[in-house]
Structure formats: C-alpha cells, structure tokens
Length: 195
Length: 127
Image (tube, rainbow over all chains, first blue to last red; front, side, top):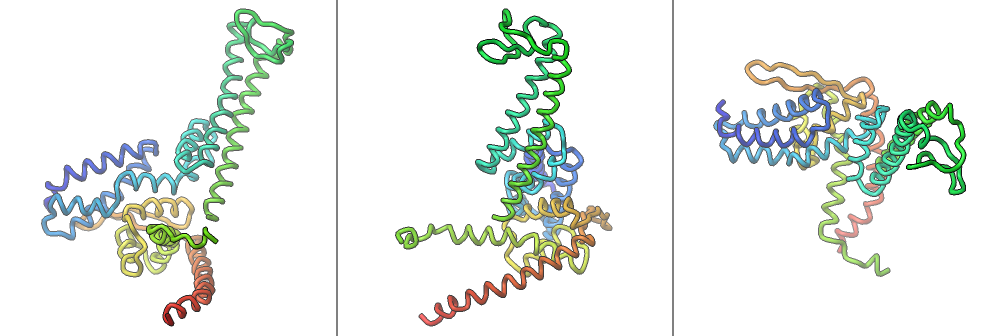
C-alpha cells in the first residue's frame, strides 16, 4: 500500500506524541507508540488509496497527542512510581498530579518540602567537613541553628557525632517523605475511584 | 429552592454522559475479551458495535496498558502474514474473576436503577 501521502502527517503526529510521553521509560514508550502506529496502519489499510485528508481523519478519530498522553498519565500515574523509593521518581509523579487539582498540588508541595528538608541535612553534613566552626548543631538565645556565617553563636552540641546524625536525619526525612507520599497517593486514588 | 430551580447548563448532560461512558469502559473492554483474544482495533470494533462508549479511539490504549499492569490482561505482539505485527490481549485468570464480579454488580445495579427510573419514564409518556 502506498502511504507516501500520509507519512509526513503521521511522522509529525507521532513525533509530537513521543515528546509528550518523554518521561516514560524508553521501552514502555516505544511499545505504546508501536501499538498506536499499528492501529493507524490498520485503519489506513482498509482504504484503497488513502489521501492526506484520510490520514488526518484517522488521526483525528484517534485523538490529539495531548489527549492521549494525558489519558496515559492519568491511567498510569499510580503504577509508575508508587513503589519507587527514588525521590526524583516520586517528585516527577507528584508534579504530574498538580494538573489533577488541589489535592495533587498539595501532595507535590508536601513532597517538595520533605525532600528539601532532607537535602538541607545532607548539605549540612557535607559542609561540616569544610567549615567545622560554622556548621553544627548550635543552641543560642535565638534558638537552635545549624549553620551561620561568618561566625556561629551559641553552644555547640553533639559536635563529634554531627555528620553521622545529620546523614541519618536526612535519610529518615527522605524515607519518611516517600512513605507519606505513597500513603497519600493511594489514599487519593481511592477517593478518585469512589468519585 | 432557588438552587434546585436553576436550569442546568446546556453541556452538563453531555458531561454526565461522558463520565458514565468513561466509567463503563473498563467493564466493556474486559467483557469484549471474554470469548477470544483481540488486538486494540478489534476491541474498538466490538465496542462500536455494541455501544457508543468510545469518544477518542486512542484513549482505549492507555486503559489496556493499565489493565495489563493490574494483572487483569496479558498481551503479546503477533506477526501477521503480509501485514504488520499487532498486539493481542487476553484475560488472565484474575481478569476472568474480575469481569464476572463486575458483571454481577452491574446487573443488580442496573436492575435497581431501572426500578427507580420506571415512574420517571412512565410519567414522561403520560404527559
């Protein structure tokens, strides 16, 4: 079958869909695009000599790349990373949730704040090596403090154990945030199913 | 009372219908695979014949992916003679159990709702 009239339109469509699904794993994305291509080929094969207009109509019936990518996200949003412990995967998923409304946005903010707290402890542990006099766990009249330049006020506590403790607290914050997000995701998905 | 007497927006019925269709898609897709394995377009054809469920054809594929992830479906690429390969889907044992329980639920749900709607439909005929 001669598809020369259709190829430019199809290529444009699938390039757009490909870019819309760029955050999926390569294998999953290729499999999904291959399946949709097979669908379009099947539809065009029913026609004797499909023109560019026929091709556009077939793609129109399929839906816009944006529409398909959005549906794919909504369908797979929980599956792709609800079991992943990687903060990046969790953040990416929760970022997608922001389009799903205020609940999704709240989950994203919780994830972001949790991971930022964790990151600040890791950074403190690292900085303690280079600035032992400025970074540590200090308590002064102004309250507890982790780092201050040019000079730290107050009394330092836990000085020899600061680095392992900061790493541990950072790790616990990361892990705790991930567990919390996973819980919230499942909770909200149940809500969504009920609606 | 003022809330109740407000005329609905013209697109609200359409929206409700779209949501209802979307909610039934899982059921319809799983049911279409009861007897045999099918590829995406064949599933769509079955749905087109029996209902007006699908609005955008492409949205069926993400649902198939999810149902597979949930362990209700299994899939395989099959080379066709003289054609291109197609991805076939079939029900897993878990999928069979699921569609049976969904079908039972649907049956009693629809029967109860029909009872509720009977006077509404009769009233419409009278007036």
